[in-house]
Length: 191
Image (cartoon, rainbow, N blue to C red; front, side, top):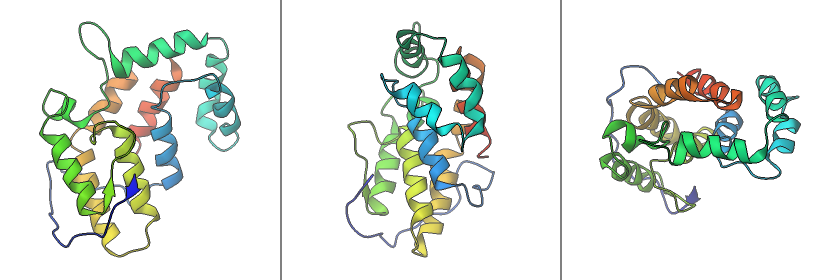
């Protein structure tokens, strides 16, 4: 997320989800969960191993990944999040879950939300990518301004709660690697 301007005064309340947003998720954890959705690269295992001291829930996943070739890990990432036949198993996009298609209405709604809080989605991904949404939530958690709490509540209630629990459940159910099953459990734990 990159800063693009001020926070507008138009605010909505309510949303599709009946549950309340988490009281105070750790912004560092939100950023970690976002990063774990990235495609694995040559240095990914060593970076994960460094985190095990602080994030003990990663220990078993790191142990498993030490036995898995990088190409297999990358293939699992692709199967879950990018492309599988007959369909992507766990598309990490709100539109896929809420409208059953990529770049659906949810993507436009979320882009509008980012604009309202003065942010622009970066990285060339659709605005409804779960990693970007988690980064936005972390940014709002770190922000010391009063409207940030209201924006955070709106983000969780309207843009995460309606679909992220189902994404987390799908991830736990379909992932072949422990890392992604545990990621699903951690995402589910946010609710």
